[in-house]
Length: 103
Image (cartoon, rainbow, N blue to C red):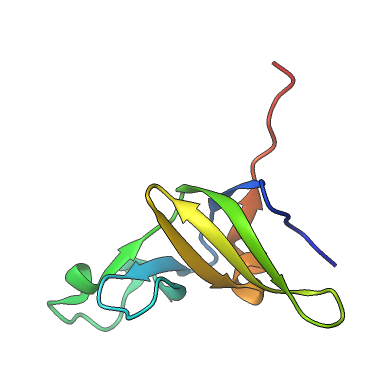
């Protein structure tokens, strides 16, 4: 079951009070699940400096890692100038494929 392939354009969506974000302090460029700012319970003053939401942004899938059973494990997504890794389970939850019109 492959929901996305290389070259697909995807939009990041919100699910309940969670979305995907990028950590500016992470060692690796990874998309993580985090609470939406308005619903965040933990109000640490550095929160805004550490996590940047990618909700409603467009990303291009530039890489796909499969397991031995040909199932997706990891997607590599390009946002602007950076490439970010996203676990397949999070991608299937938060990515929505952008369908291009016939124009």
